Image: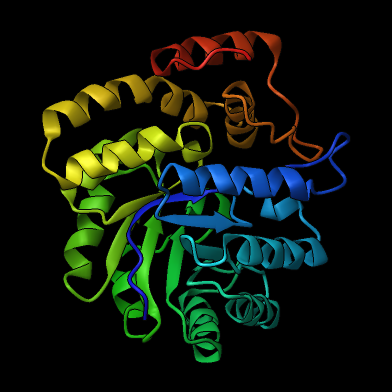
Amino acid sequence: MKELKGICAASCTPFKEGGEEVDEDALKAHLDYLIEVGAHIILVCGGTGEFAYLRPEEKKRIVEVSAKHINGRTNLMVQASAINTVDAVDYAKHAEDAGANGLLVLPPYFEGPDADGVYYHYEKIADAVNIPIVAYNIPVHSGFDITPQFFKRLMKIDNVKYIKDSTGDFIRIRELIRVAGDKAKVFNGADPIAFEALIAGSIGCIWGAANAMPKECVQLYDLIMANNLVKAKELWERMLPANLFFWNHVYNSSVKAATNLSGRNVGECRKPVQPLKDSELVELKEALKPLGISEN
């Protein structure tokens, strides 16, 4: 299996005006920029890609368009989550057939199963594909917490080689790294602790903020991997205000607004998600100033 590591840019899904049609040209342009600045992996149809608001046919179309356009220039990860196992298997097989290098999979969400049911879900998806699976832990949204002990159980499934933890709990990251040992790897999924998580031993970040600041995200990773922690800390201090803003506001609206401000138009979120209020936009612009991002 292909090793996945580094900065995984969790790509926005650009929409045309009105939000009811995916803007494929804007998507391709955005993917090109993420590749140009060195993103090690691109994730499509993730949370930052508004997968919960995408229609099934749109998800598959985005995967197909993205895989063809990326064409091996970087690694492609696809979120293949669904409430029921049959649909998740279908998404997973489609992604693999399209050329994905890995899958991001949530536990079944909204009144989901117990731990045995979650294990069954991952096991059946793994049986259907030959590419690695990243278990996605974001219990505030999924309703199920993939604890270190449960991840240890999931690691018995051959394809489950990674976890993305978005709890924002640095202690949890340390616990997961310890449990994973040399059998699995941990991606950080919480923006405000990216610096600390990478130093602690996360092999990378699956990061929505990388839409707005992909160059800086890659630079941060490279500096830490080179053990140049002084320069990494200096860079992180410039990145942190925006990452804190994203984390403490409506996430997708914030990331899209910041990406638009950076000069790459990804549109607004699909309704009912609302754009930032004027007062929030003023606050975001202030948070982006240390990165040299201003309204274009």
